[in-house]
Length: 222
Image (cartoon, rainbow, N blue to C red; front, side, top):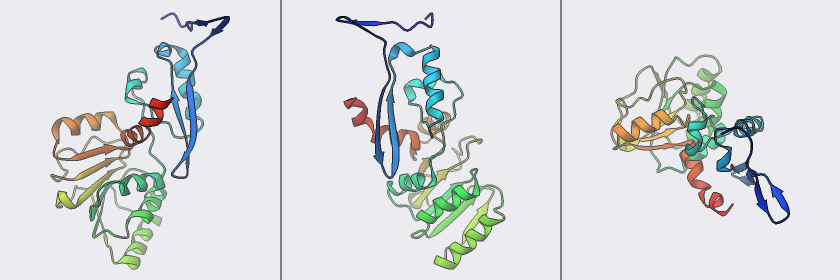
């Protein structure tokens, strides 16, 4: 392509292809669904459009556009949205969190999900400061003592949900208990590929794929 936008002639009007955008409220969030013309592929127009959207808030790029943005890192959802995505899955009494996000994110996320848990495991570096006090508060409120460990715990996968917040790590493919539910809030395409290729026994879902499925009907109506 030479970078010029092809024109579509319709009657006496000459129109350039435009992106279709629909904005609406969903789960107390303002959502913008954007469809871009296929002729934008490989042009600066697509890159400029995506760059402008990033300034408005969290932006997930559909699988069909990943090739246009090699190395693009999907955002983490807000903690309340992350908690909602977990609550939409079949309940598992043990929760394993692969830490990596900010402590404030983890606190707000756990506030919405710890009440019915029988086991809570935080995999990563030792939790210090405010996060350490927050885990003590959870124990006081519910009797749930969090286990902080550097290794994936041994749990019954049928009763375990794993939430991945580790954007800079590889997939913990071999260490996840068989039958676990794995919610990848990093929406990493490589993790998705590895789990679906090597661990068919695990229910894998990413934030991006969930949102893509949830809004598919709206996309098709645009």
